Every structure is written in C-alpha cells, then in structure tokens.
Length: 431
Image (cartoon, rainbow, N blue to C red; front, side, top):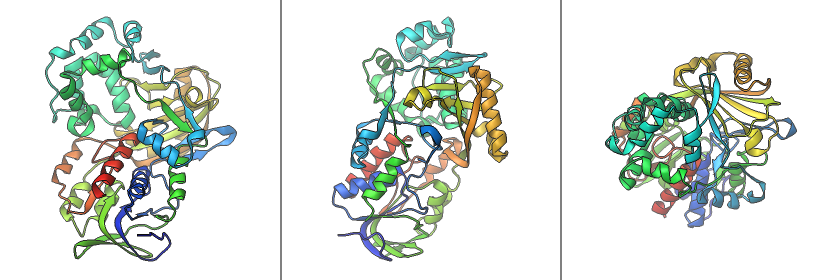
C-alpha cells in the first residue's frame, strides 16, 4: 500500500503519532517490513526531545540528549539516514568526575581508578566489595534504598545520587526500582549480584558502544530520517483525536482522518492522555498523573581545556548546577561546555529570566573549573524529563485496547538506544 504524505485522508496498517526518534525509528522499521504507515508530527520539525541549535564557530547547543551510544540499532539508523561519514566518535576512556567537597573527583569505571580515586574513602570501597552479601534488590523499593543497602551510604551519596539522580533531575529515594532502573533487576537475575557485572565492565570483559555525536548536531539524524520517509511523515499535522471505527481506528487531524488497523503513540504522557480520552479513558487518566521534571540547559564557551566526559555535582554541594558536559573534549567542539540545572529539587529555576539562569551556570562553572565561561544559549523546559518517581505507579492502571500501543520513554526503557530497540520490537509485532 502506498502512503501519500500530503493526502487529506489515508488508509494504512499503522498510524504513528509523533516523529521523535522513536516514531521515526518505527517508521523506518515498518518500511523495511513492507508495512504501510503514516507518521504524524504536530510541529514543523522532526526530532522530539532531540533538538539541536547550531551556533557560531561549529558549536552546537543540544537542548535534549547531548550524545548517543553507537549501538547496532543507532548505527543502522545512522546508515539509513546517510550520516555515517558525519559521525563524531568520542573516546569512551575519558574520565567522568563528581564535584564533591570543593574538587572534581574521578568516577571509578575501572579497577585502577577504583583503587586510586578519592571520591570514595577506603571504608566505602570495602563496603562496595561487600555487595554480594547484602541481599536481593526488591522491585518496589526505591533506587536510593536499594543502592544504599547494596553498596553503602557513601557510594550512594558520592556516586549514584549525583550521577543517576542528577542525570534525570530526580531524587533516587522517590524512584521505584521496577520503573526507574529495571536494569538492576535484570543484572541481579542474570548474575546473582550487582557486583559481578560491574566488575566485568571494570575489567574490560564487557564492552560498551562508544559515545557519538553528529556534525551539526544530533537532530540531523531524525531530520534526515523524516526526509527519507517523506512519503510517510506528515509534519505540521497534529493528531487531535483517536476513535474506534468498527474493528479499526480513525485518527483525526486538521487535514482529514487516518484509518488504521493499529495506532502507536510515541508522544509525551500528557499528549497521549488527551488522545486516549475516547478509546481508553481510564488509561488516559492514569497517564495524566505522571510527573515530569523541569530542566534548563546552558551552552557556554570557555578557555578551560580539561579532558573528560564532564562532571556531575553531589547533591549536598551548594550549587544549583546538576552537571556539565564537556563537548570540547568529547566531540572536538573547541571550548564548548553544556550545563544542566533544575530537576525535582530546583524546579522553579525555569521560571527565572534566561539571562539569570545563564549567569548562575557561568558563575558556578568558573567556581568548579577555575576558568571563565561565556553563555551562548539558554533553553528551558517545564516538562523536560520523566521523573520516574512514585507517580509512575499509575502505569499499573494502564489497560489499552487491542490495536493501541504506547512506545515511549515513560512506559519502557529510557535513552535513545532503548527507544530504537523498542521501535524494532513493536515493528516485529505489527508485521
């Protein structure tokens, strides 16, 4: 069946709502399986949370993810988009730091760093080694509780809280393991403890795909995919309602109606809740309860020349910055650093003047790095990050009708590689 993107109506196997990376990966996967689809995007640009703004001198303000891991799924999408030659591959051996007690202290990703780092005192290192004796992680306990019990309070405060909690802008004590970090449960089930797989990574027995970016910004990936599948992707075409039409579904848009056997929603929870009102009101009410965290992203230029991934800030420090990514050393964007502020504990920062947010980021960067920073771009998002907190219990009430699927970062694994893997799974099932 041929899909014509500018037609007012269409009859397809699958209607995909949202042309973020999940929706476009699904569009690609369905096309490869000869499944007809139309993908609806409310805005004029593809990408969703992947949002890049090129700046002067080759710098790029990334308002969403700042890097990807080059998994097989990501590599296949890069090739499909024709961007393989534009990949920038970072050195995965670069150090990551935590700012604690007035200094940058290296995160131990290998045994030699574990021995020498001053981020963990000797007694905390011994406590980490005792993890196999601490008992199983429970699905309904919090990430904070599970990590403190497994690895000790100091490892939690100096490592997990700033790195994991800071990345998502949430409090790990409010994040249930089964919703926020199911990988812990899988690791425990597979290996019998958490220490064994961590040790395997530290000794080089488990390789991880390298971090990558793209010349001109990560948004070039979804943009190129949307162009490749221009016959399937309709931009500036929001889905406004979903209704039953016999055994099929009718998806309303301002330009007409899409008739489809299956509907896949890849949009944020509030948008999905609105669309499900007529076909699954109880599920819509559950999705409306999910909380998101605010975030401010500040792109800066500095003469600082440190090598590494960047740093996260320990929660007990007197800084509002959650962390800083060092694009300078990661991707050769000379002098570029990106700061993240906000999250669950400091959500009101996004209500402040962008110039003031930039000043906070630059002043705190100078305090940590001993080098001045010049603000190049400030972006704020009120609902930027899924909180993965106790509100995620509402997902237990989801009861979607046959033919409606949620393929999203709040119902399955977070992170772009996880989104691509889920798109592949959904495409296999629908095919």
